[in-house]
Each structure stands twice: as structure tokens, then as C-alpha cells.
Image (cartoon, rainbow, N blue to C red; front, top):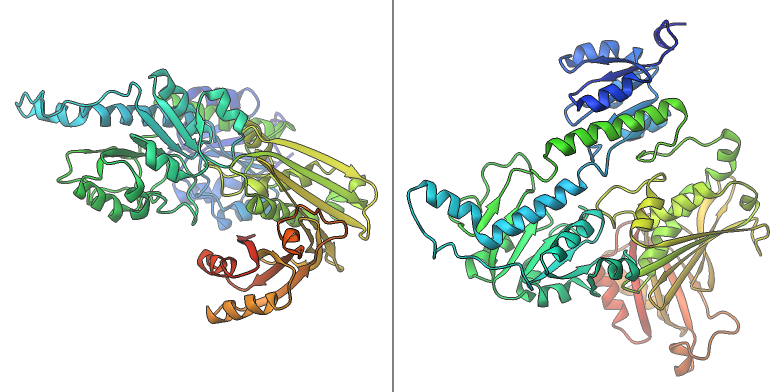
Length: 552
């Protein structure tokens, strides 16, 4: 038995490449032979990594595709922390290596740091501290405000946002939150008022804290338009991701007095030592990304990631894997081609859901695929539905837990027959009073994903990355109107399909009252369609609504 297989005593080998808490190292040593290589150079790591079945790292070690290629025995990469930016996850996945992180290790720490900055902002603690060190006794200058009965607005109500809400409620604050991907019941459980959009927070909140994921859609969420809608003297906080607040807009709002103060722990690029608000802004409190920096969080991250390494190497459930878990070759041969379709349908259905509170995700599998274990497909549906809508990365393993903590009920159904198709996946999202359903199948030798149903309207179109959907009165000339406006904006249409009013359409359907049923039009393009173009079309006669969705 070689070192590449196991040590002479039959135990697998694990390398702890960066410093973690002793508890994590001890846990690994209960199961494996462990080497600690915190002082290894990159060259030594590359030379010796082939001997190890597992490796545990933090943020400094770069697990590149080249290094992973040299890790001939590696089965798991444990990341003691939240992000996995320093790991080539695609390369690891291709090699069948599980990549697991510790996404819950810093949530308490981040929530507590948010509260620390909230109190510092309200009571001018850093400024008063510095003033006193300078020999001044400025009691009146640094008089602050109470949190008691003030309104806190939370934009992004995931794990950290919910922990912040619980702590703010202990200060007898009124808490409002905006996150359409959390059920109404979860808001009620926490005593938090659910609002339909962030504008309602801007209009009412004395303090606003953002806890959003960093995506192209959320970048610059707090911009000039948002600040203009806020109450005069509002105080804002960002302990989530750099770039969620438009720096220039915040500076202007502070200069004008619209914003009375700001507390920032994260910045557009880091490390950041020269920032426009570091100088000359006594009402701005800043910290160098300390949201996850506590001894407890560091120990927790090490221990949680060690748990995942143990699970991966002993046949347990790796609950924080960020890549696809292993699937039997026989099942994967059938189910594999439908995984992208399941994810795309989940993403599309969620995008089309108009309600402000998602309550349920229903996944129905029909035909031949119903004979297999479709749980993996359900996970893909949930992952697609929540992708980009939570502060942590959603994957096939953590998707159910993320849905559960947001109060979203997931229901799976399998039916042995699929009318008109050998296999069919239908995804329904229930949001408030709305039920949005889409269905798809695989067509051709490679089972290419195709959309075949939108809100009961049958059509057939191959799914591509950029999809735009319109609902409109079933009148002549509507397709031409979309094509004309797209052309005027330089948008190239790849394909288009229309689903007309189904038989037995409800007499209460909006357009039916006007003598015409509602049709659905799906258009794919070679680039994203800006929201402004969609709204231009929707504003014209006969169109009811429209959505531009990136399925990438």
C-alpha cells in the first residue's frame, strides 16, 4: 500500500496547510494521519501534495488547476472560512474532489459586528474616544441618539440579516426587512415587518443595514436614487460586501447632510488604506473588514471545515460542499443531462414570480426520469431558484438548508407518465397569491434543454443564457413589435416562440375581459436585454408584463 493510497497503518493522510484552531486539528487526528505544513513554501506544497487525501486551507493557499492536477490522491479540499475564491472549484469538480467550506462559521460574528457598528454610529463612540485621547472633553459635541424605538431597515434577510434583527429587537427597535426570497412566516416568527420593496425601508428607517449577496444586480444597491428616497439624517451600515453602496453617491449624501452617518467594514477593493471617507468625515466609522474576525469564528471555521473533511473521507454527508456531490454512474447517465434544465427552470420560475414573499417551490418530474432518484434534480431546482438571491453561494448540497431557513417549503412529486414527452420537469413557485409554473424537457441525442410551457401556454424553444419573457394580449403584430424595438436597441434575437391561450382559459384572465386571451412570448438573445428595453415594450399597448432573465 503506497503513501498515495494510505499510510502503513492504513489511515488516510490529511494536510493542514494553514493555521486553524487546535480543536479542528485534534478532530482530524482522531481519524487520519495529519501533517501541519503552515511553514511550507509553494514549491514544497506542489512537490508533496500528491501524498494527501485531504487538505485544509484558509485564504492564503491558492488551489489552482495546476496544483490540483498534481494532487493525484486528493479527495477533499476543506476551506476554513466562507469564500472559496482561492480554489479552482471547476478543476476540483472535474477531478471528483469535494470542495467544502464553513459558511456558518462567521454569521454570529458578522451580526455582532453589525450591532457594534450600529451602537458606535448611534453614540459616536470612536469619535469621542479619539477626542478624549487628544485632551478634549466634548460631551455635548458627541451626544448621540438611542436605538430604543428607532426603526432599523434590513436590506437582505438571510442568516446574518435575521440574526441582526433578533439582536435589534432586544434593543426594542422596530425592524423592517426586505427580501422577497424569505417567507412571510419567517418574518412573523422574528417579529419583523416585511416590506414589498426597499423603497419602503428608505421612507421609514432611521438606520439602514445591507446584508445582500454581491451580484451584478446588487452592486451599487444604495445609490444616489436610493439616498434621495431616504429620511433626512439616516445612518447607513455595510458589513456585508464592498460595492453594495455607491461610494460617490454616499460621499455626496454625507456632504449634503442627507445621510447623517455611515459605518463601513467592507470596501470595493481590499486591503483599503486610502478611501475618500477616511479623512474629513467625523460621522463615518470604519473598520478593516473585521466582520468575521474573532477568535471564536476562527476556531469555528477550522472545526467546521475539519468536520467536512472527515465526512468526505469517511463516507458521511458533506453538508457544505460547494460543488456537485457524487452520483452513481448509472443514475448520472440518465439524470445528468437534466441537471442544467432543472436549474434553469428554477431560476426562470423564480424570476417570473411577482409576489413579494416566496412561500413554496414545487418540482414535478414526469416520464422516464421519475423512475430514478430525482432528489438531485430537486436540489438543482432549488439551487437555480435561489442562486444570486442569498448572501452565501447556493449549491446542490446546501440548497435545502437555505430554503428551510428562509421558510420556503419545497415539494417534490414524481409521475410515471408525461403527456406528449418522454421526460418533463415542471417547476412552480408560489409567491403570495401568485403561482408561476414553467416546464421543460430535453430534446435530441444530447437532451438539449428546451422550454415547453410558461404559465400553461405551450411552446417549444431551446433555452439559452439570455431569455426574455412577455405576457401580452393575443393580437397580431406583437412579435414584430418586439423585434422592432430590440433591433432599434441593437439586440440580436437568436430565437422566439409563442404560446397562445390554452383551451379553457379562465374568463377572469386580465386580457380575456378585453376579448383577447393572454399569450406568452419567449425570446432568446445573444446578450442580456436591459430592463429599460423590457419596460419600453411592456409600456406599449397590449403588453401586460415582461422579464429579462440571465440563466447563466
